[in-house]
Image (cartoon, rainbow, N blue to C red; front, side, top):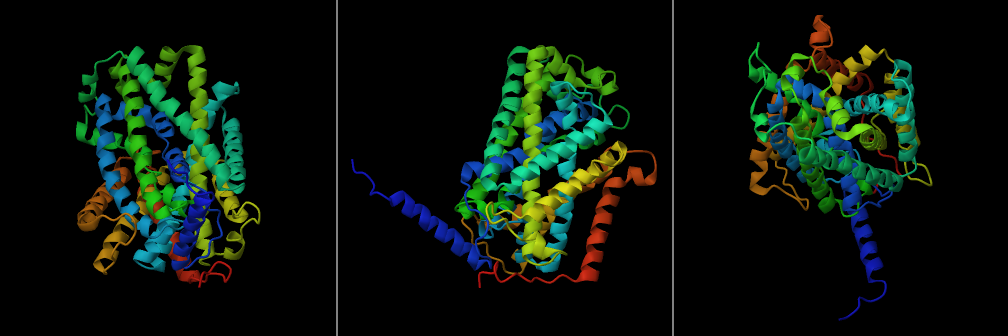
Length: 492
């Protein structure tokens, strides 16, 4: 048995760092962010953003009440569709592993104006999503820490969480990875652990109940009810794109970012299935849930199954999960704002692209992703709920802009050249992914529960997308942003 020569490992690391810097230079940028993440940490950021814990605990009640126990089948349906989108993202991120993900990918596949609008929609969706994840934390933190769940306390909690996440993000990618790893542990315990416990010791139903509607959709037909309940799975299965948003901080990103994306969706799917099944089978009366008599089935199941001490433990995991999810989304948004600013295509780009000399993070960009989401929390609670309805559809619009960009790129002769390519499957995967995404956007626009009875409240989701898009187009028309990369950021 022979030992590797002293210094071989360090030499390999140096060679990889040099290769990563050379790849980044070939894409036009010099290495400024800290490249410190491996596969696991990249996965941890994506997984805590996707956060099956946050998703299931946020919308389980809605899914069950809307679609009955057979709403469970929305999980594989959405997984297949999002799997197609992931494959498109994996291919393009492997060739263009750049901070800001969606914006940079669209720029290289189609062009700067198209990319600007793609990133604009996605940026605002991320900013709203930060609020949408931080805003419900009081619901769980209040009972855990013993303070009242009031509108004032909800605002305070939301703002404190967002600002604390901003501090962690500002301290650099290593701190982000450390907290994300804690979040992964909480996610696994809060989903797989609790789900298995419920399945083994507190199931009250047979597994066959997931084949029944239990009265859901009795008046308008079950197809509509099932499509509406798809919001459950749609709300959960995105976030894998965050692995690409931080690609400039990942070692050997062409190989590791696609793998981390796949791990994020795969592990997220397993955790979601286990927890959802555990909760569904522990519900004693589906009829009461569908009729509205039992309005909080998730809370009722946890209280009945876990007891006082167990419920406190579950609340602790949930709070950690929500906080780490907020942190990961804010990290993705910060890199996107920084990527825009580095290209010089937004107002204040010099300030927004400036990095802290010690932590190699952009303080001004981080501030943007903290101040705007925190400011949204001060709106009246009903208005916050209305604003949040934009988040999922906005994310999906950003996603599909990249899938469409892949199709356009292929039609113009783009030949994927990263470590991961779809080969001859590229065309069918991209087209199927686009069909899925457009269908999901239409369903979300029509089936998302209205926030009132007026026309604006009924059609808030598509109207909000249209408003954000119109403002973006107006910005393009007035400011006419052109790429102007500063000399210190430009590789050549």
